[in-house]
Length: 295
Ligand code: NDP
Image (cartoon, rainbow, N blue to C red; front, side, top):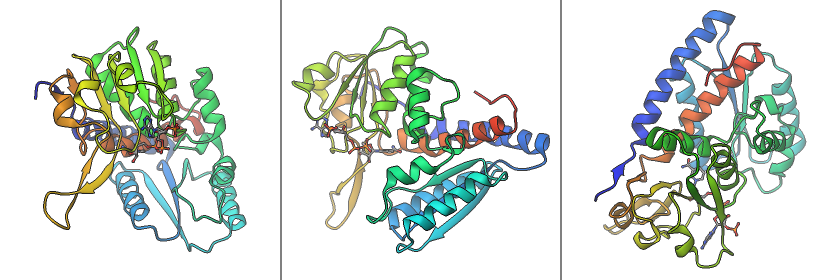
């Protein structure tokens, strides 16, 4: 391996410590903690794990975590009523409705019901629009925000670099592309219909893979000296029977022979996502309290 391994765990720990300090300052200034309300509908085991980590991250950072667990058969109208009450609650700064929702619910309608200024996941169309037009009031989706944080820590000024983002989802690929554009990168967005993706990827100074296909990006897709950000989290069969392991969208060992720096999976982008959720909650709390939001 020649590439530098970008340590997302360490970067996330640093960010969480900083958020903790700022959360204490917020509490001292306003007399109340910054608070995140999480909503989980049903009992999806993966969602339960995510919610537990988000809640414990909040508590560790000195923020309040208010949780609402609803049965899977909850009607969409009841969920929308809960969202409305959280929107109206002055003690709630951030609202996170864990996805996916049960099939009888329309996730887009539920997200659209969240107050954009409490939308700490950054999924509301108003926040997507704010990000697209460069409005600093945008709350930006946590995973791409975490990727950008790692890239800036690694490379400093990103201006003029050619960034290729593989994936165009609303939660990762598109906001990632917008953030890189705002940093004055030349951005190419690739997807399942892109022709000759390996050749395109080889042009990238910054290569972001957010696809959901285990180890799709091979070593010979990477330009020598590129910085590679692997967003993918894929569970595949392990070497021992019955065991599984996590891999990214990038064939790590191969890519690390060519890249200058690369995020591992696990331990790269993943830990940054919750750290950015805590940061977004704190930013929302500051804005709601009329205070200057921290960087
Ligand atoms: P989606 O399934 O919503 O989007 C995947 C994107 O990849 C689509 O735009 C799709 O193109 C594109 N794609 C699929 N196959 C190919 C292909 N063969 N060649 C080129 N492009 C392709 O996924 P998400 O954006 O939600 O997530 C992407 C990955 O990131 C997943 O592994 C997910 O688990 C992970 N993830 C990790 C997070 C973290 O915290 N680290 C958070 C969120 C996601 P098209 O639009 O044409 O179909």
